[in-house]
Length: 122
Image (cartoon, rainbow, N blue to C red; front, side, top):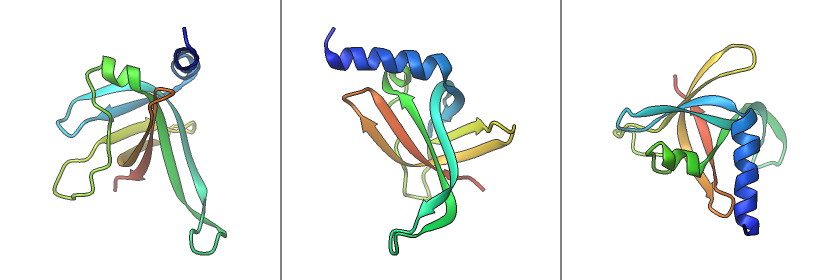
């Protein structure tokens, strides 16, 4: 086993052994539950001033091998409002149901992890 394979095996253990359950829905309506690392915080940095401001920054990180095993391609942000976006639903630690769409997708193919930046669906 090489270093990358060992890192991916460790990812499988830490992410899927103790992650948060999220539901991923593809544009074609196919959905499945996955274990993810997630964050949803209200402090962001204003890119123009570098000053912390109140906002919303939500992300989930999923194991690429698990997505492929479930028959999913890598999720991606869809900018065209006429197309159906990738969706991610999850429940916060306080029991709030959150519905989001994928804004951007940042795969780390060395580790086998994809981080999805999310936007609330209103």
